[in-house]
Length: 279
Image: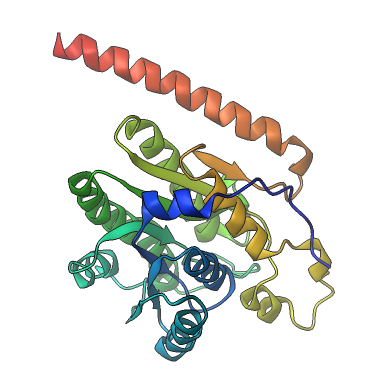
């Protein structure tokens, strides 16, 4: 039994009209990424499925095509490799992409910063920062040219503050949250939407592999399908979703509200500053 979320209504027809006909899902082979694929295919979006495991992507794409009549493409990519974001944009030039889901970047707890090879830390930085920037910049300019589009950035509650033994994961997930919030305000009025998701602990294959043989209670995790539904429903409405989890979960609604209030105030300050400079 997983933890529950009060799920809002999700209008799939409106969503598909705004963010279709194609969506790119980075990190799509299983878990949360596969949930995005399932739910987007169910409302009729064609899919570009990206991960390091092409055989899993092919099986997922074939199943969804048979079930929902969508078209799919698979791209094998290591999102820790430099330039992967650019390659995703270039590999889909022939498709009318309307949605990019950044879902890669899981990391297991207990990783000491100094005991891990520095290359591993730099790989997380590349995946969660550099390649995210490359992909959002590339797809965003295509969205501007077509007049609409959307981004979902799957971050983590670990990005809300420092977390020992998850130093690089926490740090790069904080980058993702600030990046999504900042761009949300900057894109105001441009018909391009972005949302950051401070995701909780979710019952995914990655988590189950990580906690195998431990006393961790899977019942304390959330259903990834519910988190995905929430993100899809809130895209275009909010800059950030924080799902209650962790030591400060009772304060999460207030933290989420405070971050949005601060963001809107800074957006107004930036508009006034820009106007003064131009004048």
